[in-house]
Length: 366
Image (tube, rainbow, N blue to C red; front, side, top):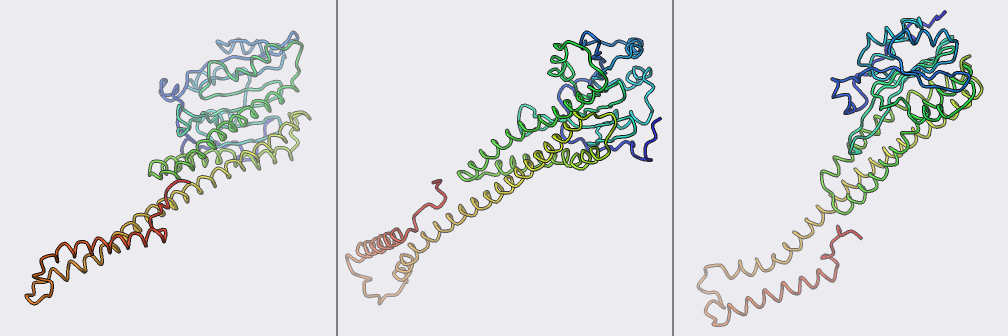
């Protein structure tokens, strides 16, 4: 009998979705259409069965074989409840999985293990992050997965591998499958972080060469995406450790070892997101430094022009005074001589400033 701690299985909705909805969910009004299938672990080997109604599920249940039930799409909640009626699941278990979006969680009870994660991916651009919720229920003889936005097949790699296997499987192997599925979702984050790392390297070089506001905006978007990934990974750190301390009876030695490795994977993901977030901060600081250098270059150029034209302005101001008693006022060659004197002064100043390195462009990429 399931006796959870009060509030342990309450629905923990997020204030907003971790990222945008996958494109295929927009077609169906926000939720994917619901399909059901099951992998039955028969004595001859795993076999994939398409389910059209609860009667088929009831026949599978009566066979006494370990079953991996896959619920693909959460568009038909009433149909999901009807399909799961033969399993007689406690009503407490479904809201934390069917209500989206949920906070990432790993909850272990007497004979139930509940896991909720978000499958993160990129759209056509790495700046646009997408997410869909994936829930897992591990019970004696049963593993149930709930995918909010499945592909054409639920977990196609594992499904294809299982169908190629021969021989019987017992209920103790379902925990290994659970570990593999959760690990697959976490491992998908590493290529995303690597892609973001390459993007940030390019941004850092671009900011040094030609700082523009658009580059800074892209950096902020990457930083926001990294914060989203970090928020999905952070709760798993202590929850997986708590699961390992509880010694859940549904998890065998192999699965416990896998969850220990998973805890290390979560630590690596968390550290990687932190490093990339620091790189975003470094790019922001580099942008500020580059803009500051360019501003200094502009001010230096204006200073050079002002210092060159200051004595010329003085000479022009003196000879622009309207006095009749000026010595050179009626000199025939005075105008040309003054122009040559002004040109000589400007040239000498320019040469002197050039020798002191004032004409060097400090913003030119080295």
